[in-house]
View (tube, rainbow, N blue to C red):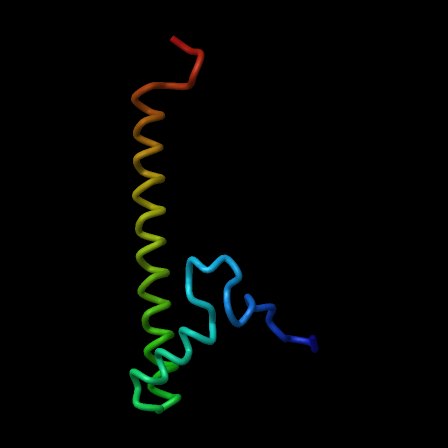
Length: 78
């Protein structure tokens, strides 16, 4: 791998539970009627939306953990 190259997952996932990169790319390309630019933009848009949702869930979980800690206090005290 050359400088600046990114290490990506295999083209097809080995665990069989989720589609691999090639499967996803083909699906986006087909949905965009073969227009690679549109397919790429849609894939990026979806990825950013998923990332935003994951960040929202993480913040929500962190708030719940923090509230639980404040209510219960440190373990072993009291």
